[in-house]
Structures are given as C-alpha cells and as structure tokens.
Amino acid sequence: MNTEPDRSHRGSIFLQDDAEILEHVAYPGDQWVLKLRAPECAARARPGQFVHLQCDPRLPMRRPLSIQRAHPEQGWVEFLYKTVGEGTSALSRQSVGSRLSVLGPIGRPFVLNPERPLRLLLGGGVGIPPMIFLADYLRQQGQAGRTHAILGSEVPFPFRPRPAEILWPDLPDGAIATMPLLDDWGIACRLTSRAGIPGAHAGFVTDLARPWLASLDPALLDQVEIHACGPHAMLEACAALATEFGLPCQVSLEEYMACAVGGCAGCTVAVRTPKGVSMQRVCVDGPVFSAETVFPAP
Image (cartoon, rainbow, N blue to C red; front, side, top):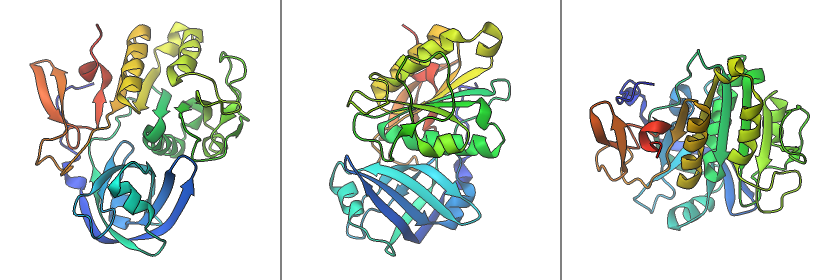
C-alpha cells in the first residue's frame, strides 16, 4: 500500500444542519444504534469513514462517530456508539424526530486490493461499526462468500447473538455465536468475549483468527488481507498477527478529535513513510492506515 497520504477523499465532507433522527435504539452496556436521515452523507460514505456529529444543540463540541451502515438510495446513515461522557450521554437523550448537525463523511476509507480478495475483518467494541459497513459493501460487490468477520466485545453485543448457520472450519470448539445480520448476508462471522457470552469464544479476536490463518494453504494465504478497527491494544495485536503470517493489514485508528477536519492537529500519530517518520492527522490523513506504518514490527 502507498504510505503517502491519499488526499482524494478530501472533497467528500458535507455539512447538514437538519439531519433527522429516524431510529434511536438502546442496547445493554450503555450502547445505542442511531439512524439519521442525511442524504448527502449517505451518498458519499465509504467503509472506514466517520462523521463529526452534534450531540445536542447546547453543546458546541461535536463527537466523531464511525459509520456503521449507509443507504444512498434511502438517504440514511447509521452509527453505533457507547455513552462515555457528557457528549454521548446528551446524544442518548435525543428522540426520534429530533434534528442534529452532521459533518461528513470524513477520512480516508479502507482500500480494497483486488489481488487480496479473501478478506478478514476484525472489530472490537466500538470498532465493530466500520467492519459492518465494510462487510455490507463487500456483500454488495458480490464478495460475501470470500469475507470473514470476527467481532469482539467485553460488554453485551448490540444485537442478539445466535448460532451460526455458516460453517467455518478450523476454529476452536464452541465458537459458534454469530451476528445475525452478517450471517444473513452470507458472511462467515464469529464472536469473541471474555464476558461469558454463550457461543462466543472466550478470548480475543486474534485468538480465533490465528488458527484459521494457520489452516490455509500458501496459495489461499496469499489472497488474504486483514482489515481491523478497535482499541489500540487490539490493533497492535492485529498488526503483529499480520506480520506473523506475512499479510497486509489496514487499521482504522480511534483518537480523540476536536475539529475532525485537520485544522487543530490534535489527533496526530507517528506514521512511518519511505521518507521517515511523519506526524499525520487521524481525521483526514486516516483514520485508515497501513498497520505496518503505525505499528512497526519489533
């Protein structure tokens, strides 16, 4: 992957001040799924991008939320978020029919390499939404059968897990729980958690990914690329897993943001480039980066 910043996405940002809340559903673990009518954002959104959302008209600071799904024809975008502070708590009190200001889509999306059509999607916690968006995009491209997803959470999932109908050989015994939506899309999916969720593997997403990757013959392994989003420690483990198997890996970083459009430079990270280390902004130079550039092998 080209390690120089790709700026082709910079023209996608659109401001809509009257995005209507169409659905707002609470789930255990202080989690919410929010659906907004935002046609311009929906038309431009790509997997891996996010929006900067007004949580309440009385709060001046917006919050970044990863896009979970987008429907260009119906004009809506969907998000999963967890209440962790004043902003998201205020957002959780917004009701259906309320209108909020949304800025987006923002950021560099995932890049799909045609030479690596066997996709492994790894999502953890609030890093799950970009994986769902990417899975949906791949499904619409007719690639559901070549897409595999492993989702992890230490709180209850924001959906009701069920036993998978799609077989996935070479995984540890007992790893049978799946996200129904992905299963219905024809995408092999399994869940991990250390919270005792029935059917979920009691470990990390990389614990399930490793035996599957090890089971592939060299010709198939050469077709695999990893896409990941989640907490820093999880992404670091995903990068190490990719290095272990000699695979390319793209990671979507999660950072605190103030402006989210590159002006404040408050979300910079060190990125290794052929010209040396470069301080790049997660909001507009990312959030998607090649894992080896932000998590170099020891």
